[in-house]
Every structure is written in structure tokens, then in C-alpha cells.
Image (cartoon, rainbow, N blue to C red; front, side, top):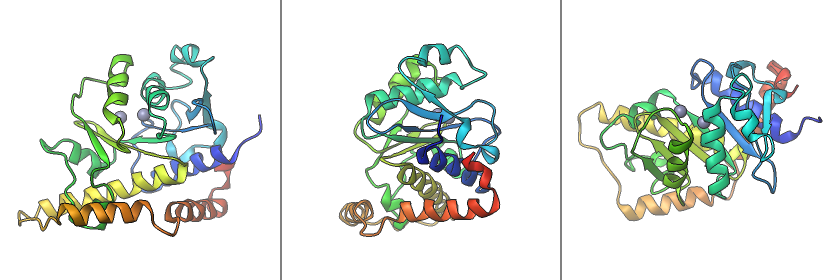
Length: 241
Ligand SMILES: [Zn+2]
Ligand SMILES: [Zn+2]
């Protein structure tokens, strides 16, 4: 089968996540729906993010889904459950980035894991993140449907006691949000760690900034992924294989 640009884009985001040290052993998953379908690509089980190639992305379809669920050596079954449940139920979540990076995960461990609007990056996420607050073990079937329902009409979801899940219409968007969520969580937790009072901006300012970010005239997410791919084209072009 011919390798698509979608697979190359997605492979590039795995490589970059590893460079940022936001990966975890050989766990975690990113997925992207094929245009006009709920069939999706997801990473093959056991491949380190730093070695991910476009051909390591497995296409999960309605037809092969059940068989793949029983083939944990091909795809992590929790990937099929969580990502499959969300892709099926939440139409705006075309691409899903689910990871356990340091700061987002530390935030997820707080009693109140709401990211307060204290800088531009935290404001991007104002009112855009649902909290899945019923951690009930690894993402098997029942847990996955609850997660999909908890995402609802929000764009992203903080998984309490677990990690973060960002989504986007495109690979570039979803990955850009993962990158910025981790940065925002880092800033927020660093600010909290001073034990000084936070200078939280008003609801109006936070909402306005979030809308401005969502409708920004320049497509920063796309430019970011383009730059990432240009760097990888030079340094490790086998991501496209
Ligand atoms: Zn996942
Ligand atoms: Zn997870």
C-alpha cells in the first residue's frame, strides 16, 4: 500500500514527541482518521516513538477492529478501545494525541486539575478541556466509552490520575495542542510551586484569548509540523518509510 502524507505527518509527530521527552517507554498512542471515514491509523505496538515510521501506523477499520483487539502484538488493545470509541462517537476528534508527559500528568494528579488562565498558553485551553475524573484502570472497553462520553463537545480531555488527550481536525492541530498543553501545564505548575498568589485573568479576557487563538490568522500548527518535517527530512528521513 502506498504511504500517505497523513501517515508521514503522524509518524513525524511521534519522532518529535520523543525528541521532547514526552514519550513513555513504548506506551501511549496517537491516531488519525482517514478523510471522510472513522477508520484510523494508530501506532503499532512495541515501537519506540523515536523509531516510528509511516509504515508502522496500522489502519484500524470496522472490518479488522475485532481481530486487531485480539492481536496485542500488533496494536495495544487499549489504543483501539480508547481511540476507536472516541473516533466513533466524537466527530470533531479526527486526530487524537494521548500521552503521559511530565507536567500534564502531574497536573492530572491534583485534586483540582483545572488549568487556570495565567498566561497565553494556559488561556488557549480555557474552557476547552473536559476532565475525566473517574479513573478506573487501563482503558478497556467500558472505561473507553466513559472517556468518549466525558470528552463530549470539548476539544481536549485531561484524564485525572492518568495523563492528557488532545484532539484536532488535522494531525498538525492535534499535535500542536499536545505540545502547548504540556508547556501550559509546565508554566502553571511552576507558578504554583512558588506558593505566591496566582494572577489569574478574568473570565472575559481568558475567553477572548482562547477564541483569538482558535481563529488565529496564521496557521501556526501547520507551520510547526512543516518545520518539524523539514528537520526530520534532513536528520532522520526514514520516518517517511
Ligand atoms: Zn491512547
Ligand atoms: Zn494513557
